Structures are given as structure tokens and as C-alpha cells.
Image 1: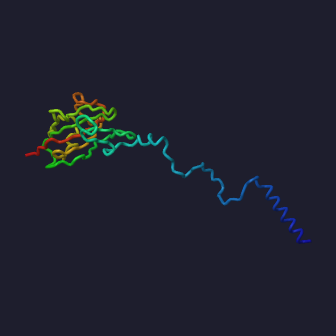
Image 2: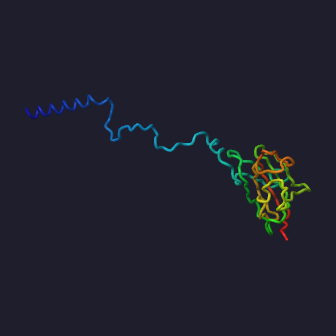
Image 3: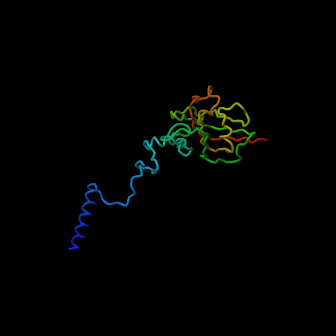
Length: 198
């Protein structure tokens, strides 16, 4: 009888515990709620579409496609402005062809053909390819089409080809130049001759 009384007490105690638990609650070893919001401690994911996120990054010189003369029709190289990234804010250059001979240096002069394309429009503002006129930059001269010509052309060699991206705020002489003053431009140059200092 004593054993029967003990069993009845245990059953009654178990029934009381079951009555105190909310329906459907299962035992868990997860710690109780600490008050932290869901997702706390998880790194925030970027918002917006992939295109919108990419547009916050600046394009590189490698993003710009240059098709050789004649392949896409017209005189001179054809330039394709990339989509999905922002116009660069600093001067960029990329070698398209190494060229031969000594490189341009301070005190010297570079004569070259070039094609200039607007970043926002893709419009060709000026091209000397197929024309008798070329552009000449004398290193050390104050009056240049761009303040950055010397920096952009340093070490370039004869028959060398170089892609140059000039942000709008680095242009000078824009009133007489082919591109609008507020336009970033892409320039592809092909050197006709390099004169080294004596």
C-alpha cells in the first residue's frame, strides 16, 4: 500500500507540471529570450538591386572597351563606355600598345593622334585619326588642353597607344576645347613621334 501511495503522489505531481506548461511547448536547451531583436549579430546585407550597388563603384580603365581602327567602322579606335559603374574621379591610364624607342619625359615633346569620347553620352567630340592635324604636347608648357596631359603621357613611346580617362574637374581650356566643361572624357592616343630633351 505504501508503494501505491508513492506512485499516486508521483502521478499527481507529473499531472500538475503538465497543467502548468503552455500547450504544444516542447522542452528546449535554447537559452531564454535575452531581449535582443531577431537577427541581432548578423551582418547587415546590402540593399538595392545589383545594378544599383555596382553603380556606387567607380569604373576602372580595364572596364572600358577599345576596338581597333576599322573593326567597328569609321576612322580611329572605337570606345565603348561601360555601364553599371560610376565615372572615375581620378586620372586613369592603360597601355594598349607599348610602342618603340625612348619614352616621353620632361623637357621633351609628344606628337599624337587621338579620339576623345564623352563619358555620359558616348559621343565622339574630336578625332584626329584620318586627318592631317595631330595634337602636340610640349612638356613644361603651361597652355595645354588638359592640365594632366604631361602626367597622362609620361613615358609613352613612338607608335605607343594609351587609353586615358580625364575627369571633368581636371580639364583646362574647356571653353576652346571639344568637350563640355562638366564632362568626363575618354581619350585614346596613338603617338606619331617623341622628341626627347637635348
